[in-house]
Image 1: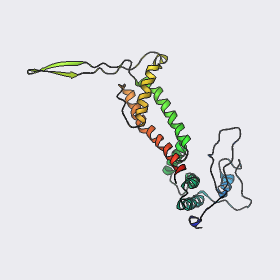
Image 2: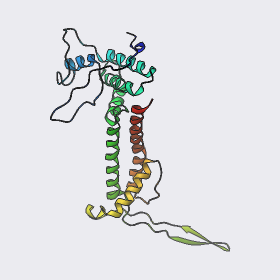
Image 3: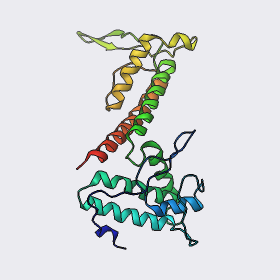
Image 4: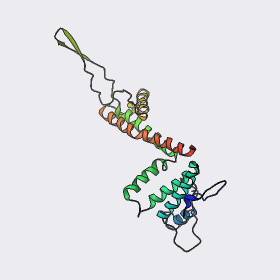
Length: 243
C-alpha cells in the first residue's frame, strides 16, 4: 500500500483506544487505526468492549497485516522528522506483533510481553518508574530484613613476625546474619544503610556496606535489574520529546 510514502501534515485525527469505566485501564492512550478496532471487536479478548466493530461482513485484517500498516505509517512520520508522533504507531506495531501467533515466535512474543509490561515498549515512562519504585521498595525491605548484618563487623589486625619486621593482617569478622523479630530489624538506621546500598546499585556503584551472604546476592540482583528499569524510563521520555 506504500503507506511509508504517505506524508501526514497538519491536524490529522486518528481513532483512540476505548476508555474503561469502573475498573483499571487495560489500554494506554494512543492513536490507533480503525482496522485495529475492527480486529479487536471481532476476535479480541474483550469483543465489543469499547472497540468499534466493522460495518461490513468481511473478516477484519489480522495482526500481521496490521503490524505492516503500523510499520509503514511509523516510517512515514519518522522520515518527516516527527518521531514523537510516530511513537503511537510503533506501539501499535509491537502490539500486533505480540498478538501474532503465526508470524511471531513464542520466544519473541514472550519478550514483547515483558517489554510491554515493564515500559509499554519503551514508551510509557510512568510504567517503568512504577516498576522501578516497586523494585527499590522490595530491595530496601529485603536488605533491612536479611541483607544487613546484625552488627557492623569491626576490623581486627593480627600481627605476624616476618624477620625483623612485624606484618599486620586485616582479619575482619564475618558479618553475622540478623536475628530476632522482624519489627526490630525495621529501624531508621538500617533503612538509611539499605537506601544507600540501593541508590548506589541504580548507578552501577558499590556502596561499600558490609552485607550478609543473602544481602550480597540481593545487591547483585539490584545492580542488574534497577538500572535497566531506569534506562527504560529515560528511553520513554526521550521517545516523546525527541525531534
